[in-house]
Structures are given as structure tokens and as C-alpha cells.
Amino acid sequence: PRMAAAAAVEAGATLAGGVERGAGSRIAIVEEVDEHSPRVVHCSPVGECESKEADEPTHTTACPDGAASAASAGLAGAAGEEGGGDAFAFTHVASWQPSCLKDKDTRALLAKWGMGDSLVAAKFSFSRRLRLPQREGRAEARKAQLGAFLRDALNDATVKRAVPLGGTSSTGATLAAGVTEVVFSELAVTKTSMSFFDRLEAEGIVHGPMWATGTTGDDHEEDAGAGGTIKKQFDVVVDGVTCQDELRDALANPDTEHVGLFDEEEEEAELLFRVFRQFVIGGSMCQWEDNVRPYLAVTQSTYRDLVSVAKHPHTGQLVVKSTAVELQAVRHGTRRSTVLPSDSPFGNCWAVVDEERRTLTLWYCPFVSFW
Image 1 (cartoon, rainbow, N blue to C red):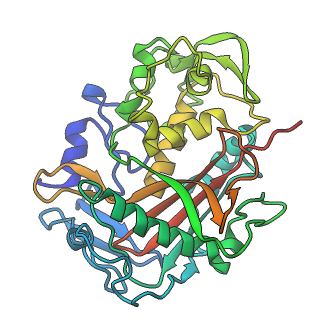
Image 2 (cartoon, rainbow, N blue to C red; image 1 turned 30 degrees about the vertical axis):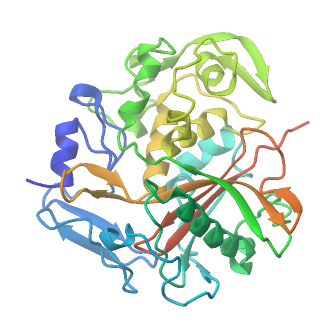
């Protein structure tokens, strides 16, 4: 059938229920596929679901409040065509959590990795339409509109109640009111396949098959002996992170022997790469894994929670429809302050915007030294 499921099967496996390995080591990231009556299923922020038959164009997803389709959302236009110059207002979608915080076993992994008390993720709906210009040709206009939108978000009391911007989950938000500018960089969201990480095996960082044939990522404990073992090394400490294996060294150490494993300008700016590095590095008290499969499984499910994926109307390829940015700092007039409570390179604050559904997802995970 002409559908996302067919694209996933052709790629070797679907990731609707986990991580699977198939022919050609291409593993598509899709939202959800019903194998009996294949549909691409999209859920709204308030929990209402809309599904489309395989032959319907998936680039036009109607939102509950009548937001524009992806096709029109991609066109250049004023940020906030509806509502004039009013600030965006945000409503916390309290029922939403990423799977890594909902699932008991995954929460145990986050605690083991030193992230259990530091990670906060929240989703918000926003009050009116946001239309961002395409990156090609109108980069400055796009940056200005994104900046204005993010400024409204970081000044919103609802957002600051849900996410401890500038602080930690124990201190609450410490970011001062009256943000006049947000310093950020846009992340790439071009990857829709976990085969992006196959190079870890080719480079010798991971021994044996990274993927268990015919199994999902939830089976990593039972199948750990079949492959996926991470190569050990002598300890190297980088910015508070102990690199006792070559995977952590490759992701944290600028002097690693694996320099160039991921292209610094392009691939390291991918949200999928950042999510993977977040879990591998963890927090300052991380108890690392000896096998790569838990990292891959949680990366896959989290990435799918953060971004929206659709089928391109002309090529049939899966494409990410969301916009992702890394929040770095804010300005209050001439005064600049960081969004995170420390300047560690391993803390993360991401904002993921879905223009169609009018949702903003914030991922906030500071790296706070134990000492």
C-alpha cells in the first residue's frame, strides 16, 4: 500500500512498538501503524486522535482548533497572523508526558543515568497561529519570528510554573521576568531512521550487532549477550564526565580518537544526535551501560515523542514537520543570563514547535555537578 507503513516495511522495520532490526539496517521512525488496517495516527494535544487512510495525503492534518495545514504552514507569513501583535498565550497540557517519564522501567534507567531528578519535559498549546518562513531564502525572518515566539514562551507564567527555567526541579524557575531577547540556535530534524547510529558498529565502538534481529528495544536485557557491547577504555574525565568507554569518549571528549565520527557542522546539530548524547552522557552521577541497546531504545521512543512525522505528498518519504531549537541564553535589556543553571556543555534545553497542532514542547535537563 502507498503509506508510511510500506515505507517502514521497505526500510526493514517499524518503530511503532520499539527498536527492530531489518534488512539494510534502515529503521524508520513512525508515529503509530495499525498492522491490520494501516493508518498513520496523529494525536492532538488534548488527547483526541485523528487518523488518515493510507491513500490520503498526510501533509494536511486538521487540528482541533482549525490550525493551518502543513502545506500552508510552510509558507512565509507573519508570526501571529491571527491575533495581530498580541503575545502568544500558553496552556499547559498536563496529561502529556514523554514515554521515558511514563514508563516505570525507563524511569529506573533515567535514575541510574543520573537524570531522574533533573529532567523536566512539558507540552503546551498556544493561542494562535504561528507561521514560520522556510529556512531557505528567509533565514533572518524565520529567526526573528522564532525569537519573538520563544520570548513570549519564556515570559509566560504558565510555562515557568511547569519548567524550572534557570533553576532545577528543587528550586523551581529562577529566570527573571521581562525577557527581551532569546539566544538560540535551530537544530536540524532531517533524520527519520535509527540507522544514523550504525557507524558506531562500523567504527568498532560497539561490538557485535547493535540490534537484536526480530526483537524490540525492550528486550535488551535478555539479548545483551548477542551483541551491542560497548568497547571499554581507560578513564578520561571531560568537564565532569567520566569517559570509561569509547562511546562516551566519542560523544564527550573533543580529543577523542573518533574525531569526525559525526560531522560537527551538520550531524551534531541534529536533534536525534542530541537526544542520544543526552542519555549516553546522563547526569553527573551517571551509572553507565555496558550495552548500547538501552540508549538506542530510549532515544528512539523519546525522539518520536518530541517530533511529528508525516509522509511527503510528492516523494512519499517520511519527513519531520516539527521545528526544534536549542535555548542557550536570554537577555533582559543589556543583561544576559543562561537558561540553564550551569554552563556545562552536557546540559540541554530544547524547544520543539509543531505549527499544525499549535504545541510547544520543552525539554529541560541541566547538568549539575555533584561536587
